[in-house]
Amino acid sequence: MASFHNRPAGAAPPIPRRVLVLSHTAQTGGAELALERLVRAMAPSGHRLTVVLLEHGPMEERLAEAGAAVRVVELSQRFVSASRFDLLRRPTLLVAAATELARAARAVVRVGRELDVEVVWSNTIKAHVLGVLVQPALRRPLVWYLHDRIAVGYLPRPAVTALRLLARLPDAVVSNSAATAATVPRPARIAYPGFAPEQALGRDQVRRRELPERPTFLMLGRISPTKGQLEFVEGAAAVLERHPDARFVVVGSPMFGADAYFRSVQERARRLRVEHAIEWLPFASDTTHFLDTATALVHASPVAEPFGQVVLEAVVRGVPVIATRAGGVPEILGTDDSEARGLLVPPADPDALASAMIRVLEHPGQATERAARAHDHAMARFGIERTVRQMEQVWAEVSGPRRRYRAPRPWPPPARTSPERQTRRR
Image (spheres, rainbow, N blue to C red):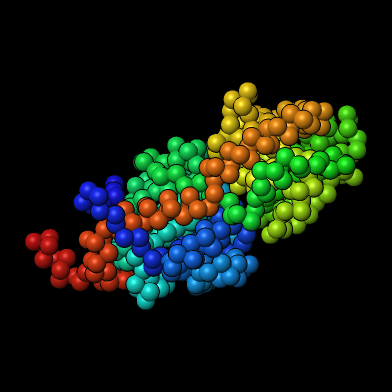
């Protein structure tokens, strides 16, 4: 297993400035928005970050505005947009994906050499695989920043097996929560995806926050079976029996082949006769208005969430949160009922979700107290400045002089000739 390089006691290693970032999709998701915030926070420190994307899309412009140089190595959409489950269900797509990744690796190596990068940082699952492919040729330290739990249920079993083997190859693994780190078969640093200062309200503002006149429960994030829109709709039906004036707002769009799931959720709402109370809105880059006009945010993921960035977004604006008790979310909201910073419910339990929403409506003072505690905790622990320092420390530790100045290997590797093979056999 690769390890951090030793250095003389008391000598602080220099922080690498030329960093190549691999992030396969140019669509707006949790890992991508976390990357944008981190790039923006690092820009004033003189970092020269170059982000390689495998498609054109909205993140291309957003990352450039944040201060990164952006290169696009365009691959086929059927590979870039395929979900982790699609790749394993369709062998022909998996073979095509391997070919596409090999082509991308050659292009990424050329970019890395042109820029003389000091560190390679991968930010998504497909990018982690790509990083492993380019590392032998670039001969530069590779750092995985994991935003996904490498666990069965969250990922298909074959993918879990493969990724756990590959996770031994990077020079360092950074995870977005302790819950994610626990799924990695090696020590991993924890660097929470921090919030930007402009996302947060001050302590006094949070304590003066007024609840909306009409009870409003909000869901933020892409529409997917792993995010719990179905459970949200089923829970809404139970809430409406007791509070018929409640409304439910879902902000997000289906990605990675989730259109059929979206249709099934809407059909479920019609069968439960609650479609009149549910508003479906597309992805929004600025969710401030929705958060500030919500009674509570609902995070209904039926599988363990790696971290829960939308939970953090709500917390730093003083919004009460209801979430499933799994993955990284308890690291934000706590688990001790006496000091709870939100209401946690079992995953995939619409009845428990409904009970929590009713509790918020019928005990608003308690909800406000929990939200205030959550805000104080988040402001002290989850700022983006801390994330920047943690990432810089890892880059410095894996970039010892021996690693930075070794000559890169040729790419692609030269093929052995027949005479060489024959000589070795003799």
